[in-house]
Length: 155
Image 1 (spheres, helix red, strand yellow):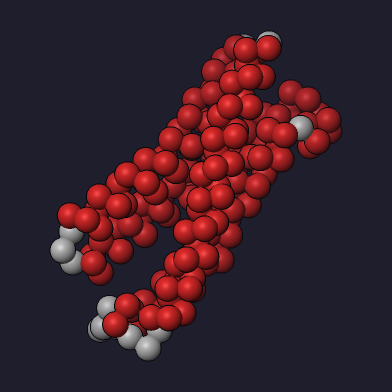
Image 2 (cartoon, helix red, strand yellow; image 1 turned 90 degrees about the vertical axis):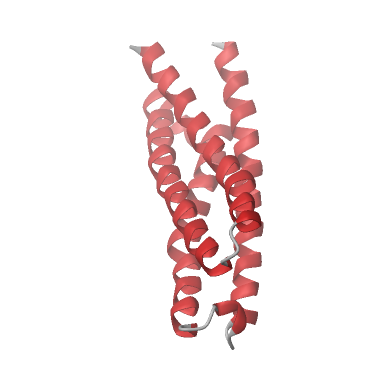
């Protein structure tokens, strides 16, 4: 049974980090490059990022619970626990902090595209902050994959 949980942990880390990279650095750039309607591309990208955030919340919650179950209170000081906690916190900040404000700006700009409205500067600023935070999360994901792999090899 212990191997099953270890394999599930590996799978969830792979799915979470893989989705961060696949959506953020492959699918969304291709979407904006190939879709002439930038407003539609933004809506679709937002939906993809929302799904990645919810996937991260599920994976992160399981991974933290699994770490606590395996190591108890000691797990709180481990690099994997801290990394997952930071990644989960970033998912929450992006989904429930920054994205709602960006969505509100888009709605206020209607029927115009937010990028061609009085809200463009604020939207660009929030988009830049969101992108930087997403990059940090993606880099933490690389660390998580490497660290989890090392720990798995040691067991």
